[in-house]
Amino acid sequence: MIPPADSLLKYDTPVLVSRNTEKRSPKARPLKVSPQQPGPSGPVPQPPKTKLPSTSCVPDPTKQAEEILNAILPPREWVEDTQLWIQQVSSTPSTRMDVVHLQEQLDLKLQQRQARETGICPVRRELYSQCFDELIREVTINCAERGLLLLRVRDEIRMTIAAYQTLYESSVAFGMRKALQAEQGKSDMERKIAELETEKRDLERQVNEQKAKCEAVEKRESERRQVEEKKHNEEIQFLKRTNQQLKVSQGISPQIALKQAVCAPSSSWERAVVREALDPQLVDCKAVMP
Image (cartoon, rainbow, N blue to C red; front, side, top):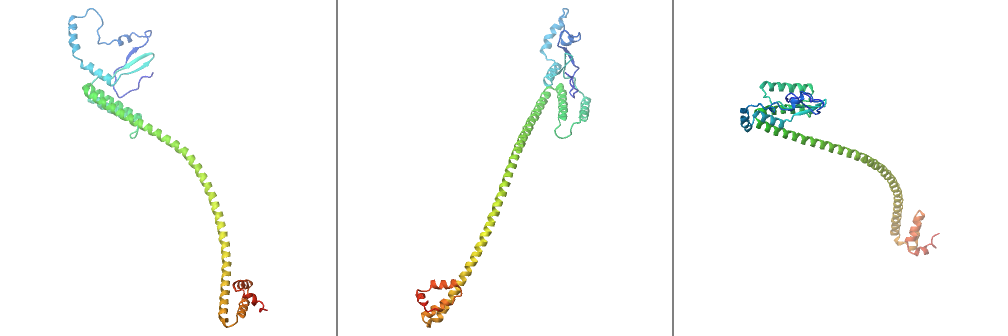
């Protein structure tokens, strides 16, 4: 495992802890034992034993701050050459110059790692998260309660960002699903459009055929109507002339009037109409006609 990269959060020097007893170095043995604990030797003076209960009753502020720091910011571990290294957060109080140096390091790392100034940028988020952890460390050393409150603020911010990230991922998945559905629906719509266009061309062809038939029927009926109107007008004119002749020839005998009425039409169908329209006296009149 590669050792962790440099961070804006200040750590103490790494402590070596060996896993294998065969490769344990002589320097690793004292590292496993805390230097604050006294060895089990006999020549221990009596006064320190009487002072231990008093010190155990009163908690050490430095040790308490270290415990809180380790709880807020856990130590990081890595393995190198089958050896375990542990690095805890520094419990050294910071000064004003440390804060100024932290700001300079933040600007430098943002520039070196080419973080985006606006928009979503994981690099910028990581660096600002490290800077916020360093501020929590500095505040916790001076006041543990402020550090715990800042821890709550940090956890709330991370939870909110995680919620937004989950929402973004779900929206992206929803968008991709809708895009795939749109692609599938697009092919179906294209096929349906092609079918509708074919049906439209067939209907247009049928409409043109029906229009041609309608025009032919209208033309034929118009010609037939003109012929019938012409015949009707001729018949009306003939009947008018016949009526006029009958009015003029009131003093003439019926046989002569019928003879004139029959001989007046110029066409054969007019004669036929007169023969059908007049009384059966036409039969007697035929003998008078030449």
